[in-house]
Length: 226
Image (spheres, rainbow, N blue to C red):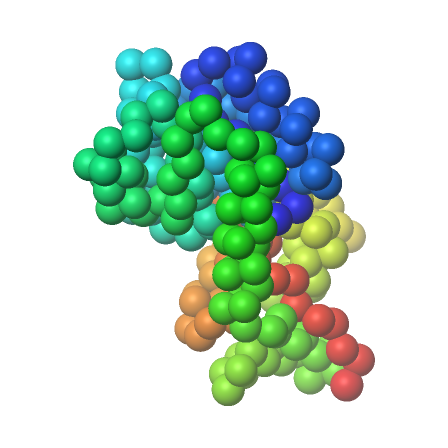
């Protein structure tokens, strides 16, 4: 888990959690509003999240349920001062992977995060292999053949290490020199790639990051010359 999203309506709590987790080697991002937090959970840029049950007038349990409904699959650990069994059960049933009651020991919190990290690592398939020579993407028993332009788009996104790439930047890198004048061609090829990536479990997907562009999330493919 290289980057964690911390969601709590109290800025002091998110700041304290962020500082503590950074000391344990994590990169962190904090969010204090439930509506913005859902967008960030869907961004594909986090390896895990810590969500407080009470988010002001909003519910962290509802947030987790909404995130799971949107396809968010990263490990989520919930924090709460509510220790009753029914509250813990509600959080887990909503889709949380673990539930920690406040006040908590920070070492225990980190240990629980490490458990989720190991669980994800143990179940994650190996990275797909992308052949430069044959322009094929292979993951497990599945193989798809890419066109030259699909290959170029995929390798460009993979080279950005899960960071979003603006549509204009993709266009400038791959089409501008051809004299093409319509950036919509980027969306067309993103659509082609998404269809091929969804045809099997290649361990990655292309997400649209609002106002920022496109981002390849999951395991980056291994680029091979053969």
